[in-house]
Image (tube, rainbow, N blue to C red):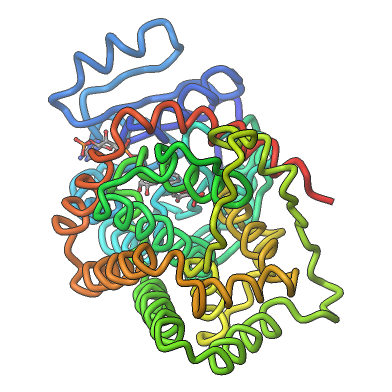
Length: 436
Ligand SMILES: NC(=O)C1=CN([C@@H]2O[C@H](COP(=O)(O)OP(=O)(O)OC[C@H]3O[C@@H](n4cnc5c(N)ncnc54)[C@H](OP(=O)(O)O)[C@@H]3O)[C@@H](O)[C@H]2O)C=CC1
Ligand SMILES: O=C(O)C(=O)Cc1ccc(O)cc1
């Protein structure tokens, strides 16, 4: 069947949440295709039509209308619902259409497409590796040519071109492996930090003390994540087949290292941390292009005043030590994904980890702080409990438990999130532009 020329293509977006709106607005602005047909749930039709007035979009009542008129249909709904939404609207797909999903985890999307789409429909999926508030230019856009020809793939890439993203070609399987390696444990770390602060009942940035260096990055990213929708994180943790055991290992690594700290088993602790470091940051790894973030970079975004004369106690950085230990235990080499398919959050987090691990004196200070000074032992104890809790929640595959845990902490942070998101966005932009 002949494919339409780009200027004659009608693009359909089912699910006008944050990502759907971001795509719709950018594609409509480019004006390179014939029409953009969009819908959300039928009960939201009138409100959506009003909201989208004058933006060059054709707002439709439901997914049947979008599917039957569009040559390229993007499902941009919650991963938890992808099967039921595709089951409902998939059979209405226009003959010969190309279908994609924006879901962050592809195993359920693939299963839904294979089960419910007619055979004449091609599957060339997409996934923007950034949140809706990050400009798409230069960020990774994964393209998955699953069922269809080169011409189908090319048409999809031409349709997505106005986003000016960097197209990365992966299979469905590799997508889930790469995103589990970059996102699952990263999110578990930040979610656990937030839960620990909530359970301690104090905001780390409201203690009146100066917070600089990598602490600022931790706080801003944690708040950034808690400012997003819970289902995005729940979906990729619970439904990605490669994510669960990584999150479990992260909790185990945090717990193992914490036990070595409180039992003051310094030689064992040091041996384990240095073994992990040598695996993740081998000194002779020419392929690894370090980010080399510095205190000066982070301190531009410090909280409080350095002139208060207060010297912050040394931190054990348990969340960072556990990350590298987890990667080493599972033999994951995250460097491999840094250039190709890292999200902005992962790149920043990796930079923070590297900042600690590429400096032996800093690493030794963390070991001493954890096993001797024990200045952060009570925080670390809460962190271990929180990491285990998130891991159990993911193992149990409970979306409602996940939502409850997430919202309890995001409510605790309410009021802080907006301010921090602004600072977090500036920080991401500044720090990520520091790359060699
Ligand atoms: N936010 C992010 O940072 C990123 C998200 N993604 C992925 O993109 C997808 C969308 O995420 P995002 O836009 O953030 O989430 P949103 O919750 O903002 O958007 C999803 C939208 O789809 C709607 N929806 C659900 N069922 C239907 C249906 N039957 N018909 C029409 N619309 C429906 C939802 O309605 P309701 O709320 O009532 O359920 C909601 O408005 C997810 O799979 C997510 O994992 C990918 C990259 C980044
Ligand atoms: O950068 C991150 O890890 C984020 O938190 C934003 C995000 C969330 C979900 C995705 O599918 C892609 C990017």
